[in-house]
Each structure stands twice: as C-alpha cells, then as structure tokens.
Image (cartoon, rainbow, N blue to C red; front, side):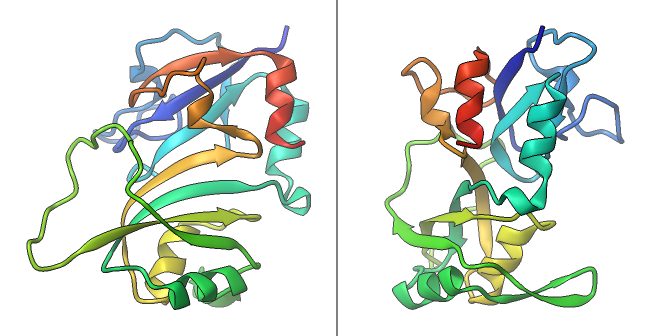
Amino acid sequence: MFQYYLIYKPFGMLSQFSREGDHATLADLDFTFAKDIYPVGRLDADSEGLLLLTNDNYLKTKLLEPRNKHTRTYYVQVEGDISEEACEQLGAGVDISINGKSYRTLPAKAHQLAEPALPERNPPIRFRQHIPTSWLSLTLYEGKNRQVRRMTAAVGFPTLRLVRWSIGKISLADKNGKFPNSGDVWEVTSAEARRFYE
C-alpha cells in the first residue's frame, strides 16, 4: 500500500535517513516511517520547508523527471530591500554557475512578499541593525543545485533564509487547516498526493 507523508523539514537537517557527520537527519523526527519510505528530492541542510516522503515510485519518477517541469515555490528572505527590477530579472531568467559552467535559468515567477508567518528558525537569522532584509516568493519550474541562492545572489540580494512553501498545488498551509511547526509530519491520501503534479 502506498503511503504519502509531508514534513516541514527543519533548518540544519539533512533530507536523508542515513547519518552524515553531526547533522540531524530524517531519522531524528518524532515519527517512525516504514523502511520503504524515502524522500522525494531534497532540501539542503540550510534550507527548510515542505518535503514529501513516499514509497510510490511512480510519483517519485513523475516529480523528479525534469521534463515534467512541476512548480516549486520558495519564500526567500534576502539581504536588502528586494526591488521590482530584481524580481523582473529573476522572472526572466538569470545567468548562474552550475558545476563551473554558466547556466541560464528558465523563466520563473517572482514577486515581493510581506514577511510570512513562519515558525521561528533555530538558530535565528543574524540581525544586523543597519542592513534591512525583505522577502520574495519565487516559483521555479526546475531544480538545479542551490539554484534559489545562486539566483538571488546574481541579482544582488543574497539569500538569508530559504523555505520551500509548496510543490505543485500542495503547500505548507495544507496541514488540516493548521500551519505546521518545524519538524511536523503529517500523512496525506493518494488523491491529495496527485496535487503535487496536477
């Protein structure tokens, strides 16, 4: 029987069950998964937010196949007051470096965002009195390594905090009408899981 779990992956946790150095892993969550449950895709240790775990290989393949171009939306806190011009540049595509080679990102959706009501990050972002921060929503149709961080840096606004808000039509707001805390795990049905790629 296929099972589908969503988690709010905390900052500092690896998107895997196996140990690697001193990092926390998915095995440290307050939940016991069946042995055939694995994460679909990944979030870097210094990123947080929505992550899917399942034993449904068809769904895994559908979500990880680049040609399917399903959306992923990130809420990004950046250093400085993000400008409309920078958002337009991000939306049109920017040049970043991937494995030492120049890469032009696909067109995306980017817009300024009021500070979202997210769980506190542990540890918190370092406060700097004379340097403002701001938030943007960035929706991508691809998933290159550390792409969001590379993109915001390319337009002059380094990423401070990165939260994956949604995959397809499923978002962090979908936890039974209650917003999850960092580290929360909740199960969804196969019908709900289809909203990842509809």
